[in-house]
Length: 136
Image (cartoon, rainbow, N blue to C red; front, side, top):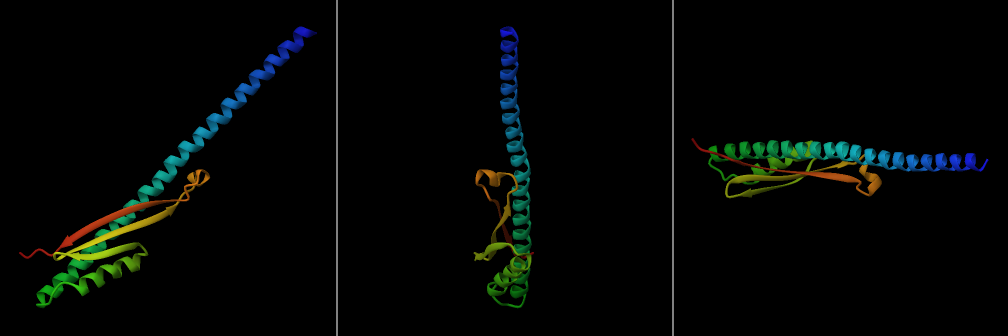
């Protein structure tokens, strides 16, 4: 009987080591899935921030061109037009006029799905664009 008990204990211990391996493997897979899915969230946020910054800078440059054709200075209208695009899209950003160029910097925050387990509740994407009125 003692041989049976010894064999049974060996099998029990093998089961415990297999269980630990499965737990570690599953946790690793969840972490990898989190990096892939939440990394995709971050890329999508960056893409949205960049495209919104480009649209706002274009709108500001178009308003600046209209002002310059009318003989005015490209300033408040260009900033207002770019800010209107940001407001309409719901993207946070800053619009500046630097040496006749419209500069827009944006940031978009997206919630995480898996990485919130590790304390990362959100990822942020940043974008920027500059548009200039070119006279031809």
